[in-house]
Image (tube, rainbow, N blue to C red; front, side, top):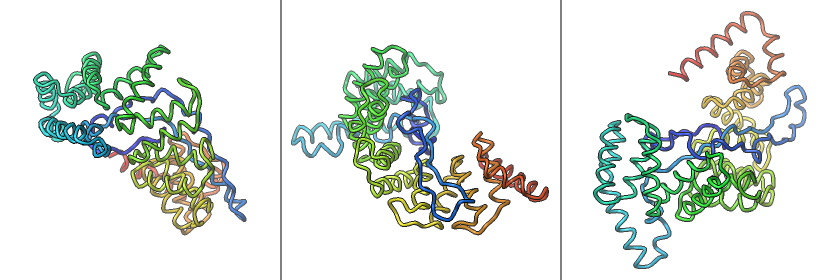
Length: 369
């Protein structure tokens, strides 16, 4: 749904492009039309950030957390017993996760497979499937990975249900896609936030299931309640546009702020736009500049150009056309143009342009190290 997320090394699944990466986000892809601030005709309008893809990830940070999650208290003695069993299984699987966290991927796989074969532990099955799926330190084997996911899904493991749904969603078969939606639903109902997020995408798009923005909002909200950054961003855009929910700029800004705090760079860019224009929040060009810079430093091309614009105009930051040119060059390297900034760069002296090019090269080099 958005720009690539920043995920911790604890979670091998979050380093993959599984899930709905093949779906174009028609419902969120078009930039919003934002009102231009008065008196900035030469500055040009600040417009919305455009998400580029829909990352989907299998959460392995807390194996089996759905069974022993926040709803267990409502399930009485049966829920407590189930939570206790889950905790015991998780502790026995921690050695495999510990090996993964230390970078001992082959050992992690061996331990996970041993545990899965010895006790039919679905958490270990999911870890084995994920390591085989992405080939971390072991030979990639999609067939074996799917077999482990199927085994764990048969036991109702939400992460396995989501993983299997992600695989089926990438099929060209309509039946497989329909099955994927049902697997996402089962996983989401067991507490898998990524599955709930992807269900939101399904109903927002209307490509696999009927287009129902209100239902999309409900699923996004479920995932957002679990602090799923992409879902927070998606729900914020629905509130911004009044799509499936009442238009509410204040709620949109609140959700964007939370998504930004959790590392969603596109959300940071959208929040900066709202703050700059004073949409749903007090207008604060200095704060907006800081937000644009934060997203630009994370490599968001739209933020790089927006930050370049405010640097060139001295809005919220001291005017610095050389720095503005450097940021614009960074954005152009990502194939994002801006005619106004092109004219600004063309008006620089040869010395200023050379300095801007050198800055852009230095920043690019440091960012890839």
